[in-house]
Image 1 (tube, rainbow, N blue to C red):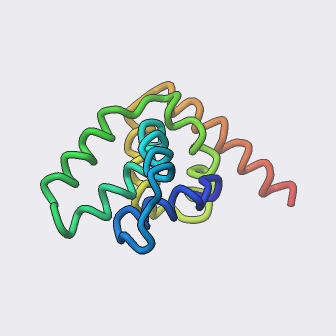
Image 2: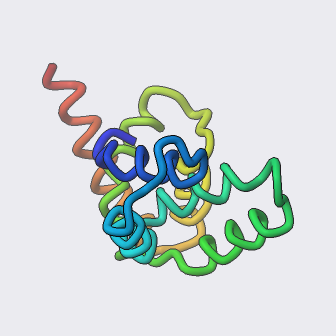
Length: 124
């Protein structure tokens, strides 16, 4: 997904790998970010999967249960572009797609994003 800042992905990777260790300020910033970012929560759960699969699966279930149309809205244009380019989705995009298909409000917002993607592709 192209709109997410790499900065937080790097902090998450560093927290998991410990190389280099996060400063207290970076730890706090990442903790706050994880409170609002479903994408980083998904990435964190996936990182935990090999070492503690039960915890990771629980985090993924919690994430799926916490999704709302408002929370997924910032990701819908990237999801529409990904679906336009290939019907096969992976990872976070697949999670989003399952949610969008199960929520009428999110599906409506997705269809608007999809129409914009199609229009831009036709105009180019």
